[in-house]
Image (cartoon, rainbow, N blue to C red; front, side, top):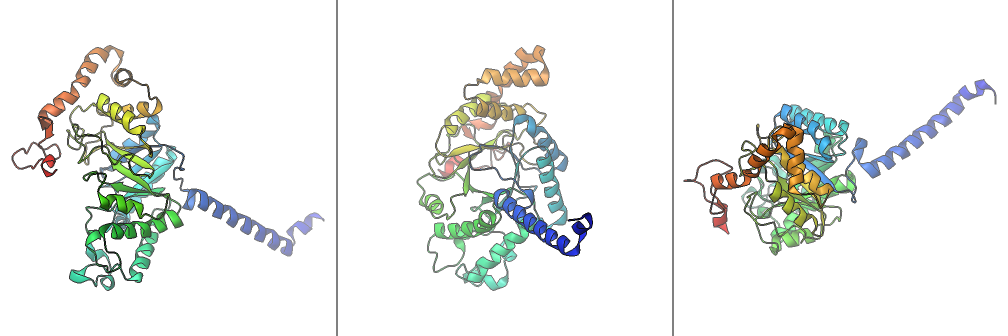
Amino acid sequence: MVMNDLFHPTLLQRRSLKIVLLGSLLAWLGFASTGPLGATPLPADSPVRGWTILSGNEKGARAVISAAPAYQVNQIELSQDIIGNLNETADAAKCALVNQLIDQAHNAGIPEVVVWDRALYKIDYYPAEFRTGPNGTIDLDNPAFWEWLKADYRKMLDRLPKVDGVALTYTFTPTPIEDQYSKKLTSPQQKFAAVINAIADVIVGERHLNFYVRIFPNDQPQDPVVRDTIRLLSRPEIRLMIKLTSLDYFLTSPDCAFIGAVPRPTVVEFDAAGEYNGQGLLANSWVDDILNRWRRLSRKPNVIGYAVRTDRLKESRVIGRPGEINLLTLQLGAADPDVTSEQVYDKFITDHYGAAALPEVKAAFKNSYDITTSILYTLGIVLNDHSKLDYEIYTPPYGHL
């Protein structure tokens, strides 16, 4: 073959076809293993070391992401004021910000970025043709609704081409799933599972992303609604996220009994910023509490890691504040089961304030738990609403037990 033969049109066409076919095969293999367009969801055998951002403050969110690699974080969750529902991606400005933050996290070496979602959205989001049940509820027996729902999730995920996972809240949502109409789905758990499974068909089955279903620990682990909903989930890849404590993030609450008791890979949600304990603005350093809880919970079956909240909306992030020590506590606790609270205090204070400040600052940090529980709790019971000192109008959650 002479040199000119290499440029013969027929040969070029054959080579081009081979290249296209090879490229298509590689692209398909890449999609099947890592998700669309290079998404890199954490594999099943990888522990989760996650940080969650709630505040919509772009500068603050970027600061949190920038700080994450030093703490060996492998997951960033974008939630609430950044994105609380996937349908918010229809807002071009919000969608652009979410995609920029996803890119920043990936460029920083953080493999998995997860966005939050809730099902169902406000009732008027869904076309009137599906709201034909009593009192304008959605007819879950209409097959066309499920096809529309899946198509809608495809469209929303298309707007976030590099996202690696979704965390779904399915209770306490704008439109309660359990209140929608169906003759076939006769129990709340069947309705919950039907919605979750339909969404999973897209997120897991088609997009090969990680899917985290959030369980609120406001009920007992033997609660048949939660228990049977999880049993009805069709895909084994579906993971769980469960808050650290029963009720909410109260320092005096026991560990949530759901954690480890449900046979699904489980991520424990921690709160470093103190939703009910000063919201990051108090000098919240709860090293002993966090370290002890992580040791107990990490040994339970099914626990694959943690996702810790780094702020409580607005300017409450703990990065750059004393509460940042809570993030270090989880990092060191996950890396070394024998690490002591003294070692955590020593490292954080020395790194941030200098060795000379260690004795005085450590003494102050160790008082944080007692100070916080003395101000915001009475006899171990939280009496304030999200750290607001409105003792006269707030009904303590413990009163609902």
